[in-house]
Image 1 (tube, rainbow, N blue to C red):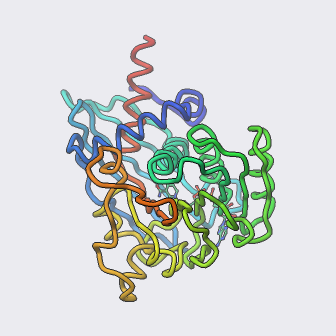
Image 2 (tube, helix red, strand yellow):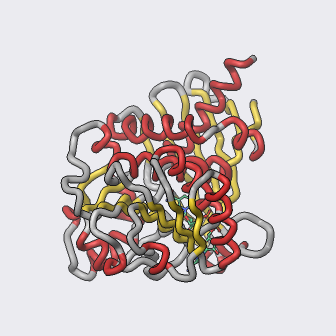
Length: 315
Ligand SMILES: NC(=O)c1ccc[n+]([C@@H]2O[C@H](COP(=O)([O-])OP(=O)(O)OC[C@H]3O[C@@H](n4cnc5c(N)ncnc54)[C@H](O)[C@@H]3O)[C@@H](O)[C@H]2O)c1
C-alpha cells in the first residue's frame, strides 16, 4: 500500500496536470463512467463536520474521502480540512493507497473552478477577484493563473493579513496583486469572482457584479449557508458540478428557490455537459454566469488514481 502525504501530493500533483484530470473527470461523470452518491455529513459541535465521500470508477478503482471540516481551527495552526482518501483496486478490492485529503482537496477544487471558468467566462477576462484568501484562495490563484490570461488579482478576506499574503503571491506570479478593504471594492469591474469563505450569509451582492462577469461559488456547501445573494442568483445563468448535490446541498441555489425567486429549472446543467457540447454555456457577452460547486467524490478519486498510476510507472 502506498502512502502519499501532503508534501508528496504537493510535489506530484501539479496544477496543469490537475486541470487536465478535472476536465476529464467532469466529462466522465456525465458519461456514466463513474458512480458517486450524495456525501454523508455528520454535524459535530460548533458547526464542524465529518464528511464521507465515496466513488467508484469503471476503469479499475474505487475509494472514499473521509474528511473533517473544522472552521473553528482558524488561528490554531490546524488547517480547516483534514483527512485521507482511501484508494482501492477494483479487481481484488485491496487498498492501493492512502492519500492526504487536505492537499488533494485544495488543489483539485481550484482546478475544477478554473476548468469551469475557461468554459463559461468571457475569454478576454483579465481581472480576478478572490473573496476568501485561505487555502482555497491560494489554490484558485494558482489554477486561474495557469488557465486564464490574468492581469490583476483583487483579494479580500475578513482577516486582512490573508488578503495581503494572497496579493503578494499574485505579485510573485507577475500579476498585479491588490489587497482590498471590502468585498465590494474587490469585485468592482472584476471579470471573474471566486467566493471561497465559510460564511453562512451572502458576502457578494448582485448589484456589485458587472455585466458579463463569471462567478465561482465554492465556499458554501450546506443548504443553510450561502455566499451569493438572491438577486445575483436570480439574474445569472447557473451551472454546477453535480445537479443532485446542488439541489440537496447548495444554500446559494436553494435559499432563493425557497424564497420563490425561481424554480429548479433555473439550474441550467453541469459544466461537464457544457464541456461535452450537450448544453450551451454562456450565450452572450453581457450575461452573468455562476458555477455553483459543492465538490464531488470522483474529483478526489481521480486525483488519487493519477498519483497512484504515476508512482507505479516510476517503479
Ligand atoms: N466546493 C468545494 O468543492 C469545496 C472544497 C474545499 C473547500 N470548500 C469550502 O471553501 C471554503 C474555504 O475553504 P478553505 O480550505 O480555503 O478554508 P480556510 O480556512 O483555509 O480559509 C477560509 C478563509 O476565509 C476567511 N473567512 C472566514 N469567514 C469569512 C467571512 N465571513 N468573510 C470573509 N472571509 C472569511 C478566513 O479568514 C480564511 O482566510 C470553506 O467553506 C470550505 O468548506 C469547498
